[in-house]
Length: 139
Image (cartoon, rainbow, N blue to C red; front, side, top):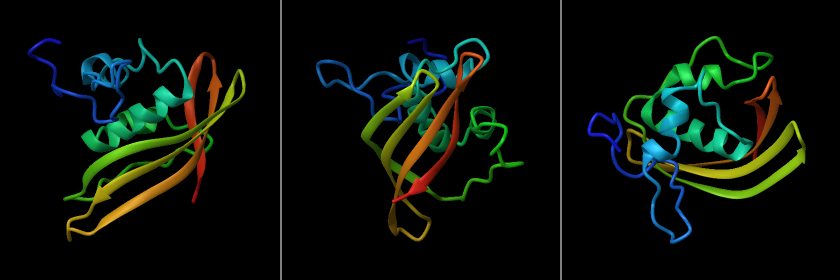
């Protein structure tokens, strides 16, 4: 990892290696966030993890670019003072070569100090070799 990495240290998504050591941001989601056009996420879970990291780092352009055009909002606003606390991937389902679902829980603390959990089963679609977030159901 270079000293110019804007997010040194472990990846916000919490991915670990085979020895259960945190994976560096530059080797995990950073490569997708920093070079979406050249290095798209290779699978739905990697896209979901990189989108979580984008929320942590407030990278709205990446979130919009990885949202399927049929469901993409016009803009993304980040709530000031939110601190993301962690991501837990609960289940992965590859439906076919171009469709997948990921169930996850993302934890955050709001500006008031109250902790909340976002539990979602997200749907992803691959088009033209790129994975996109389609939509999800809150649990």
